Image (cartoon, rainbow, N blue to C red; front, top):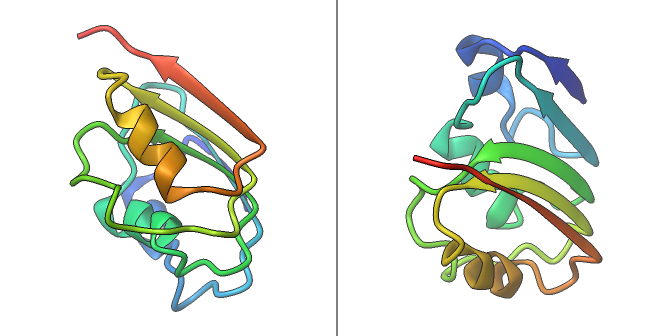
Length: 106
């Protein structure tokens, strides 16, 4: 699934219970954005069991990820203000082959 400039309504419709076989998710906003917490939760808890590739946007404001596991993710692109989230992302996604991080300034 590839969305250019997704609306909040579109983002809220991307859920594991409605798209259980999602393997690729690319969100291309024209401005900085944060994905809905439910979408981030579904991606990092393994609810999207087949999700291999994801570009999720900004995730700093999300609750600690270290309690989750996503074994399917191989490629992940995120944005964050605080690089302290990176070890949690790596622990959450032990099978990552590539992690791209846009370090944003406050």
